[in-house]
Length: 121
Image (cartoon, one colour):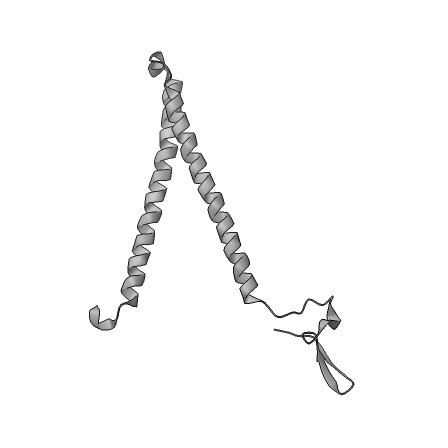
């Protein structure tokens, strides 16, 4: 890390010592604040992903449920397309969720195995 410092009147002055250099962007990094903002960004992305997944799931169910409103609509090809579009959306989201759960469980098992003492392996 580079700092701005210079000699002045037999005493070394650094930009980190006081508020003399308010316009300077030379403050040391703050890991706690960086981690806090990182966690907030991750939470915002997770909330957005959750809303998108729930919205897609509801849209798929609405397409599937609204495809066949009458008995005669079973013979219309456009209604079958609408049904299978909704079914495809719902099944893709369910398969994605199952895949994420499987990967998280596998990762947890590997971590648990790695943390066991060597004699118990």
